[in-house]
Length: 231
Image (cartoon, rainbow, N blue to C red; front, top):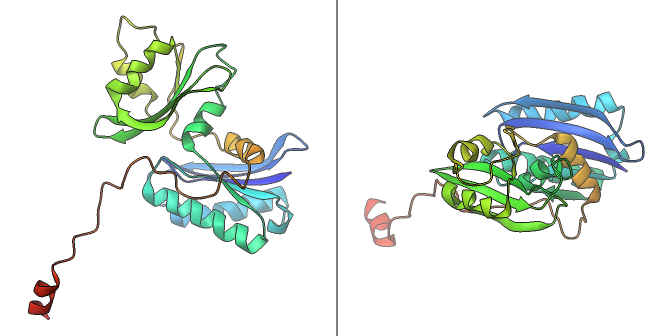
């Protein structure tokens, strides 16, 4: 199976092509960035496809991170994945950034639980917790840093994600201490591809995965009477 993977959810723009039969990435590229995903993504995808020496119609599916993350970044990646999937007549699947973070860690730390955490600002994080074998302990949610730290009840964890250091710095001294801290700006694009290969297109659509509403809201429309008075 040939998978094109895309990630623009956080502070990176990344693309890769995975050949599952060969068990390797044919091409990959990642640029760390806080803005500019819209301008960087399509040229990057073109370079990755050229490097893999593949036409888009050779792909079996397209995988994309769907959140939590930047609302603007998510729209860029998901729109690109849907557009390419439509043009190539291939399915597009969506993977959460939290699961992509955890995938690289599961099995590496024995039985230690894995806490994936993304900075949600305002002293909050998006997080989920899985056991060392990948089974779910806490479903994805947005919560205060203190609530996320209460996960110490599951034992000494492996922290991963762009909020891993935030949790580590606030971790209580009398709780089981983290066995490792992986403060990554974005998930490994290779794991996005592998998760995309395992995903079911029927149950993992490429659509945004939001855990809370946007911080910025459209301005309220004035009452009709007020609109009429100013027209």
